[in-house]
Length: 505
Image (cartoon, rainbow, N blue to C red; front, side, top):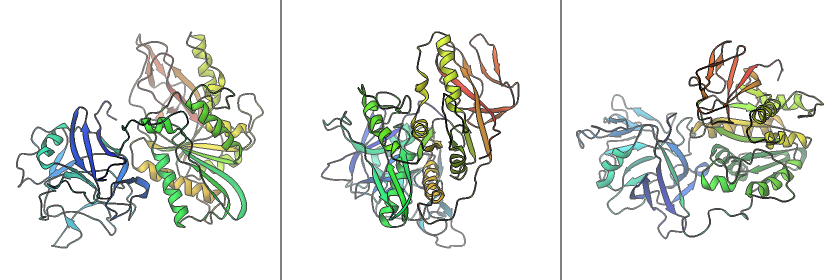
């Protein structure tokens, strides 16, 4: 993944008199822009034909241009642009919904990108990566950045840039960029203060059953959880999901301060040292007190996250049954079945024990001492409270497919627990990994060796990191890389190391 790539930022006033007018900026360059006639809408609620633009962060992969109308347009551009052809059609219905297809033998499949319109709006387009990785019919299609109308009227959901500024916009695009669409809250109000409440949405079945809590955005820059949860809430309200037994409680955004800032943390990491604080000292302490109370009221937790690097989705589970001091537990069979059927091929466990050893090694080397409770997050607290829970890592932060992974896991969780009437999901598990070690960054210059991803297999003796003096750090056995950190600084973990687990999930 590329780093330090500027973001295309679109902001619309939340209380503007004209809901379709906003600004688009790339670093210090800004231009007026238009959005859907109806303004913005939460991405999970976006629907075909609603003339609204989804809120969220989406990839920009490539652009297209009309070579006849704009000869030489793509010359010297860093962002990849390809010429259009009359056969290119963006499907807005049917089996190729929200796909670029090519018409054959004059067959009209949809709306040609080069069709003549009353204004030349589509001579240059950049598709927005919304609902396109695994398209869901009806959730919105054919969203582009293109030329705005001369009167700056609203679009059908696309982003419009003034025609005379379109080439300058294209010159500022870079490969790997994303577009961040949202409201401009810079109106003098605090984005989030210490009194901002948690939003909790609960559905109670009319028959007895277990109590499931589903949480998102414990880390504020991990947006797939809120998107997946809001889609599930919308489906419950519309009757597409019927809660028959027990209770499901949705917490779309656990850390609103971090979420509104677009950062991993507000004042600190909410998923560390999670416990009730008699005297809270920061926002996360206050939120944590409420989250702990909620967790104690439930039987099962599904906490939805995403990660920074590349890799396949996986589930983080707890320990085997034990009566030890670090994380005593007696529900590993139930939790294991739950983890194995959520829909991901990989389950990882062994976190807290190795994290405790990591903290001991930090202290031995003279880094700031931390208590073992630093490794306690939502799932660890859930087990402490007598229930069980897992962390679902849906994929890369910006990957639109991550929302689908989270949403399917919610459906599977409801089915596993019998909260909805649905068949028991099949076991998706292909590999279980037990974390057994961690490589600590001891000094400036210690670094990861190679472009590892979580779950990558490594043979015994392979170089996985290198010390500042060049000394290699090798894999002690055949195993797997977990949580590689290419930006580790002294005191951080460079990566964790796992082996094939002997546990049966």
